[in-house]
Image (tube, one colour):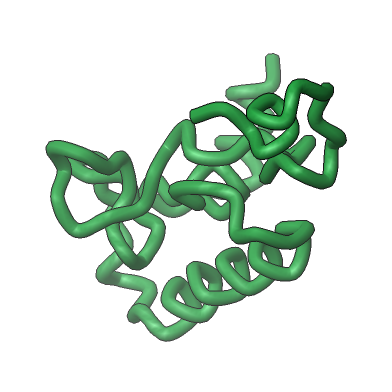
Amino acid sequence: MPSPSAAAGRYATASEYLLTVHPLGSARCGKDRRDSVVNLQGEVHDHPGLFVVDASALPAAPGSPPSMTIAAWSAHVCDGLQAAPVNSRRHTVTQQTVQETSL
């Protein structure tokens, strides 16, 4: 769809496009695993215990700088993790696990 400026025969300005410098949507959040990567709690479909808490879970640019939306999404996922009983989590990251994976 051409911008209003293109229709008027001039170049569009940056303010006429919805854009962001934050990468968004590479791990979309949704209910259906056929068109999303993570569920509404931020957990990756079919990979229990793996959570996405960054802007990649956002399906599209929110229409304003997404910093607060990213922070709210991260807080939402972390609140869910804190509310879950520890023994219900399938994988617990320990300091030893972190050291082993960073070698």
